[in-house]
Image 1 (cartoon, helix red, strand yellow):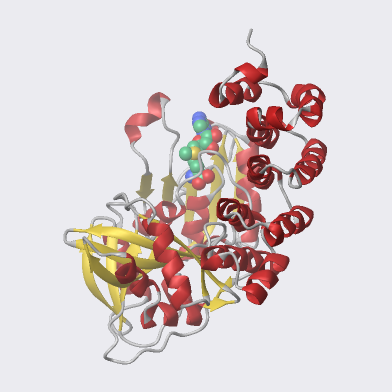
Image 2 (cartoon, protein in one colour):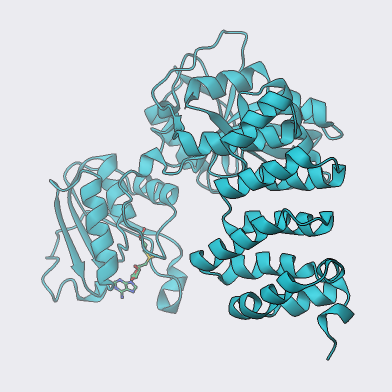
Amino acid sequence: MKKPEQRAGKELYQHYRAMSCARLWQEEVPRYAKATERERLDQVSLLRALGVVFAESGTEEEKRDLRAWLRDLLQDPQEKVRRYAMNALPKLGAGTEEEVALLSVLKKSDNSREKTYLSRSLDKIGGQATLDLIERDGVLGRHTEQKVRAALARGESATRLRLEVPLEFSSSERLRIHLRCRKGLEIILREEWEERLGEERFRVLDLQPGLLALTPLRAFTLGDLYTLRCHASAGFVLGSVPQEAGVEELAGVVVSPLSQKLFHTFTEGPIRYRFSYIRGEPARGLVQSVVDQAFAWAPGLLNDARQAPWALEVYPRPKGWSLELRPRWSRDPRLHYRVQDVPAASHPPLAAAMARLAGACHGASVWDPFCGSGLELIECALRGGVSRLIGTDLSGEAIEAARSNLVAAGLAGLNYALHVADFRDVVSQGYLGPATLDVVISNPPWGGGFASWGCAIFTRTC
Ligand SMILES: C[S@@+](CC[C@H](N)C(=O)[O-])C[C@H]1O[C@@H](n2cnc3c(N)ncnc32)[C@H](O)[C@@H]1O
């Protein structure tokens, strides 16, 4: 077997990568600490492997000890050793101590490659100290500045999407809203629009499989769009660019007056958005260049892939690209009631569409034989007209989830009964009497004898 010093970098990395945290820490780290300068250089792959292995399987304590050891290595006289140490740190949950250590290397370094690697690590772990240095000395560049500002904004204040603030616009501004749903539901969504929003407030521009396009005719709120329950998302079309559009054209749409107006009207707190392509592969590095350019033009808009409240999405069009801005809810405001879940739960807009199809009739009794977490029952009740809900499910956990969700939906006052039962036993168990039902609605289990039933069943007798 070859000794570490006889193996090439990649092979050596694989060798260390296969070891456990304990073996790396107890045998390899002490060996490396005692090694000569030449040996440290030859075995620098150990630092890369340490970052990966400890990130995957190290305990918090092990990671903390390793971070302290890597911080010391940031003082190594050899640039390559320092570079490998700084690269491993962000994987290990690095924080303020590591940030301070990296900044002190930055202050001393006059090596441009080392500075590039320092900024990559600070992109990931930089905080207020990094931002102060950027503002004072103009170091590290706009890319790192945007990353650090976004991380600080993420940590310091919860951004809220404002459902209640109206967006005012002049008659010359033409706004296009895309409500997206599962293909096939668009007709139901259109009916819902007609009933809840209507032609006086929004006009339909287009109806395609999976899409209802609207234009507002007067001021509206985000909340108005979320009175509709059958769409999965609501997006604002910001503009389109030709197929061959470059960085500046794309960034121009990201920071356009319309985009800024939407961001500022509907956001409380720092504005963060995630930029991504929906189908279609962007050229390598394009996304990064676009968001960096957008930040240079509009520093109040921060690109942030993590927990951003807005998604800025690029859709392919026959002759180019269309950019859309869409709220990304940590919790969809229409689903405040969904406090518990089951693995096979229905897609909520589908449950809402089924409830619409089932129709409303005054004083109806509704049964869901396979109620799971209760989405169909709740959507029926929220639609109105229901006087009694009955849910059965074989799973006690599902019935518990349905009960919690029903209460959270404010339906506790309704006459409802939830039973852990096989749906075939409802009559023999006395849960249902003859002629006591108006609507049967369900998303039955897939597989077994139910597969042929399709995805949804309903029966109405009223
Ligand atoms: C597709 S899930 C329903 C999901 C539900 N609509 C929701 O949104 O949570 C189907 C449910 O049928 C239940 N189930 C399967 N066989 C059953 C049976 N014979 N009688 C009653 N429930 C049954 C499963 O436990 C599962 O919760």
